[in-house]
Length: 447
Image 1: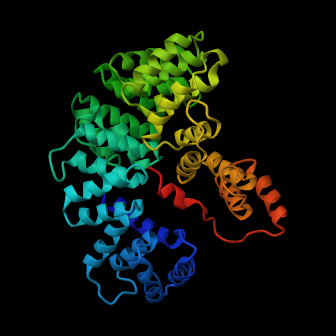
Image 2: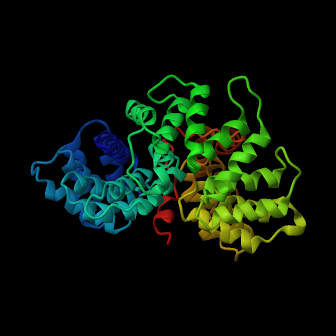
Image 3: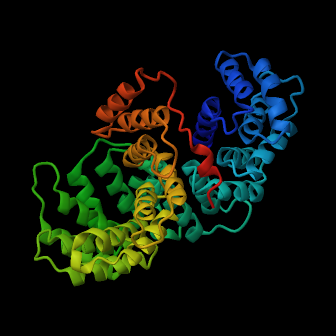
């Protein structure tokens, strides 16, 4: 945990060098400060940013707080000044500052205060959601709450946080302590010396993923089956996925997969319920059964499984014209977006642009797309480039369009390179500046 937090704080420190310039009047000094900091001239950066911070410039306040925290370019090396400036930025909605405050109070042992700041940042900074889950898991600052721990791990996992995704897999029944996934020997001893289904399942995960041992699907099946025999729904679900996808040289066995998913779904395992929903909706190894598929998806959604929310949204927009219900789809996408899922923010943005399922609101659409793009969702970056290029909801801004297309290309969007070239030709030159989304300040003001 400490290594993860230290790594996260280092990444935040690096990130502050590329913060955006929300005001043209302050832009020059802020940009000069960035240049100075990038060159290691922290004292110069401090002198340029401090007046801006005193005027309420959020990014400057955050950066000044970082300089104090890391004792760079400042004479008064009291940590209280780091907290002072980070708090000012955090109170203006700066998520990086909120997360950094959480980390500072965590290292001071003030876990309740740490949790408060982590929670403010959690839907935008996956490391904050993960750290909050860890605090609730371990009962730091209060009584342990496996339910809250699972909730925040899930929010972090929805933002592609690797450790959170592993934590969810290894959090047994959501009501016992989280075990370090690397401690495979511990699970092996428990699994072989007792009939502990939690240990058996976690050992199966280790063999399936290759964490702490050589990857071995036969051993993974062995331990998952032992755990499943003790009615452990996580193990049943993992067996279902192994048979659904196939492994080693074995082809998928849809009947076997469905058997395990059904057993876990009957025990209200939301992932198994979701899997059954997809199987019946798409006719994977069975005849397509829309009604039954929706029934299982709704069962998973009622347990706040964000992927089920998103899939229901997609169904009510795209599956069949006769069943399109955009207002219902919008509600499902909103529930998925509340967990931080970038794909859901993107769909909401498209619906706000077109007025399907909600009122046309181009400003809100731009904010929704920004939220998705901020989490490296390529289609959102591409759409923002198109809006900037064509003047949809904003003035035509070719340099911004070019940078958005560049970002989309870096994120793997197939059409972005051609679009960026088209805009560059229209401008008559290629913009060589870093990828800095011009409209980031709109997202900061979003409710």
